[in-house]
Image (cartoon, rainbow, N blue to C red; front, side, top):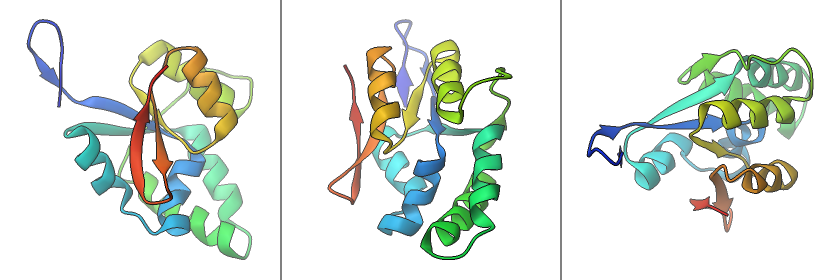
Length: 137
C-alpha cells in the first residue's frame, strides 16, 4: 500500500494495456497475484478501448485469440474507464490517461514503455518472463 507525505495510505492505480491482459495466457503467470505481491493494495484499471481491442483480437483463431479471450475475461475484474480522448491510438490514449490520472501502467510493449518513462510515469513490466517489476526513469 502506498503512503502519501501526510502518512495516509491509499491503493495504487495500475492501468493495464491489452498486452498486459494477455500475459497470463502467454507466460502462465497469475497477473493479479503478481501485482499484489509487488504493490500490496492496488486498483486495476482498464480503458474501454483496451476492452474493445481485446474483443476484436478474441474473434480469431490461434494462441493470440485465446490469449485475448482470457484477457477479456480478466478485464471484468478491473475498473473499466473511459480514456477521455476521442482520437489517437490505444497506446496514445493510455499515455494520455496515465499522464492525467497518475498511477502506474502495466505493459510489456517496449515502445509504450519508453514513451511512459519519458513522461516519468512508472511502468510495471514482466522480467525474465516470470516476475513483474517496476521500472522508473
